[in-house]
Amino acid sequence: MPRRIEVPLKVLARDRERALRLVRLSQADQQRLATYQDLLLRWQGVLNLVSATTLPDMWTRHIADSAQLRDLAPAALRWVDLGSGAGFPGLVLAILFADTAGARVHLIERDKRKAAFLQTVSRETGAAATVYPGEIEAVLPTLDAVEIVTSRGLAPVRQLIDWSAPLLQRGATALFLKGRSVQPELDAVRDDYLDLSTLPSRTDSSGRIVSVRYKGAAIS
Image (cartoon, rainbow, N blue to C red; front, top):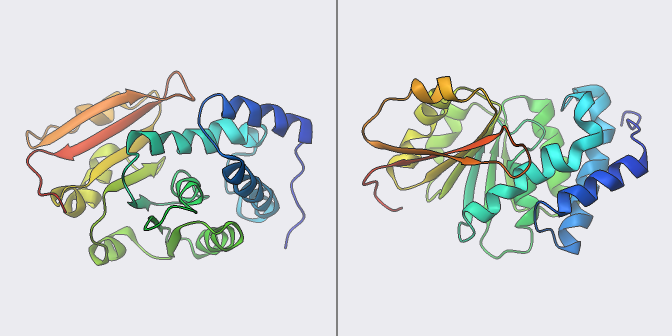
């Protein structure tokens, strides 16, 4: 295991307090997420999982940013995260669902080393996650009864919709975390059969959450 990247504990503690003002996290959630934090800092030196400049703000920039999606679909139990990378948002959500009966978050990541990281964190935290080391196009057709599709920083909205289309047509909703430059991506999506809207992010005043549904989609 590589040497742990060091971030001052006081810095992480202050950021954690900021995150707790943005999202609801139980004591059990916080303990599991602290384990996630430590594992990410240990693997960061080899895999460069996130930008090093965001490590002091990990709890707000990454954890709270991901966790906010739970409140947008509080009853949903079956999620799939496209291109999970370091685990945002999918692995954070899977950790939050660790004690929820019937919950499962499918994490798709083609980089085998990052998939190994996701599997390690999932095992150490008891997350409700299944990790798929493969291509999105190959994995998605094997999944059914998915309620929510998520992604963060992976591809333009049009591409994300194209990948997600089979699930959306069966009644799933997409929640894509995006930044301030999302409008041109939305302008490129001109489909009358889509309900597409944006919601503000709790953690970034310039961030947006893109919600996508198929009009008249069958409920899976």
